[in-house]
Image 1 (cartoon, helix red, strand yellow):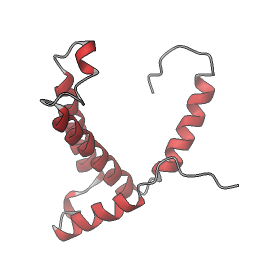
Image 2 (cartoon, rainbow, N blue to C red; image 1 turned 135 degrees about the vertical axis):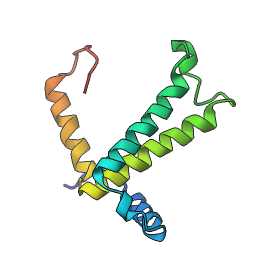
Image 3 (cartoon, rainbow, N blue to C red; image 1 turned 90 degrees about the vertical axis):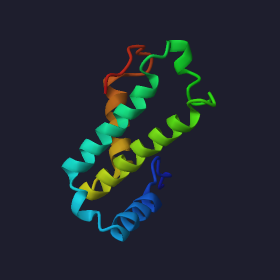
Image 4 (cartoon, helix red, strand yellow; image 1 turned 30 degrees about the horizontal axis):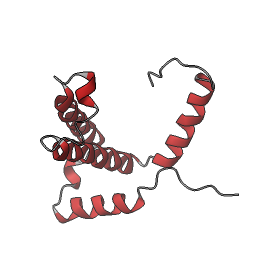
Length: 117
């Protein structure tokens, strides 16, 4: 029995390839450059949380002053992650399924230790 994909980014991969092709950006989309861009976007996301208290951090995505920026940075992180996986030929769904299985062994049910993976 085939199970549903946990992650299906096929349409997004196609849209990102089209976007890059229309701008002749393929030459800039090396794995190194995309990984660096992804890191930069994660940094921009983290910056939104930087001086927040734990309590404030829970509402950043719904606060009218920060919600759009949080959404934008999350989207940027996803876009670069999907583009990087596409350029590298990594099937994100297979990677996620494999990693969840590994984490299930490493952190068995009932283990309350937070994951650092």
